[in-house]
Length: 252
Image (tube, rainbow, N blue to C red; front, side, top):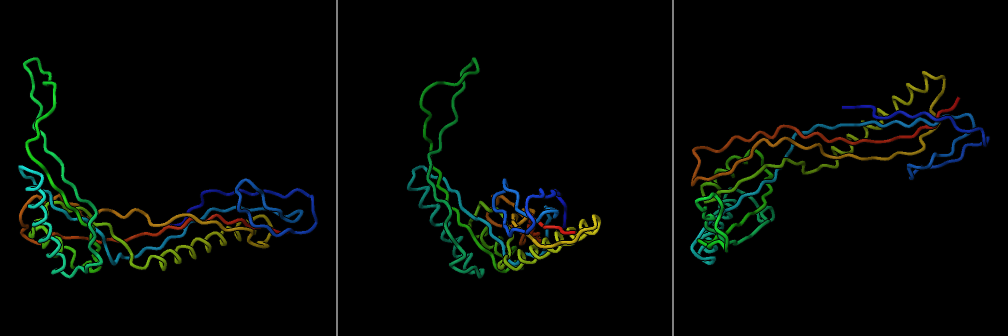
C-alpha cells in the first residue's frame, strides 16, 4: 500500500555556487542546496503483510462472597485451577503473568422513595467481589481455541482477546522500510524526468509508522462452567506500515 501525502518543490535562491551537504533534522529549516538546484520533498509509505504467529489474551475469575476473605479464597481456588489448566494446555510459565487483582465491596441497590427519589445515606454493603486476571501469550495459534476451552472449563469467567502479533516484527518493518524508500525514489525519478532534471542526492530521510491495528477476531465474556467445543479463532493477517519523508536534491 503506497500513497503520496505531500509533494513540495522549492527552488534554491542563487546565493551560492557550491552544494553544501546538509541533513534537515529540524522541519522548520530548509536544507542548503546548490544554486539552481531544486529541493523535492516526498512522503511515501511502504507496507508488509504477514500472518501472525503468536497472540496475547487475558483470562480471569470473578467471585463473590459474604466477606472479603470468603470472596478472595473462592477466587484463589478457581484461579489456581485456571492457571494449572493453561500449563496443562502447553502455555509456558514465562507466558503467564498476573495483570490485575482486586477485592471490592458489593453495595445494595439504593432504595427508591414513592416520589421517585432515592433515600439519602450510606449504601449497605451486602457482600464482596474478588477478581484476578492473567495476561497470556499464546505461541501456538493452532492451539488457541483448545487453550480457551480448557481455561473456561477450569473456572475462568472472563476472557478477552486476542491481540495478534509477530514474534519477529523487525523483519516485517524492514521489508516495509525498503518498499517505502523504493517508492520515494521511483517518484523522485519521475518528477525529475518530467521537469528535465535528475536526482543528484538524498538530503534527508525521516521515518514514522508501525503496526496497523489488527482486527479483533475473537472476544468473549465467558459466563459458564464449560463450553461445548473449542471456540474458532481466525488469525487473519497483520499489516506493518512505515511512512518516510525523503528530501531529494534535483540538478539540471
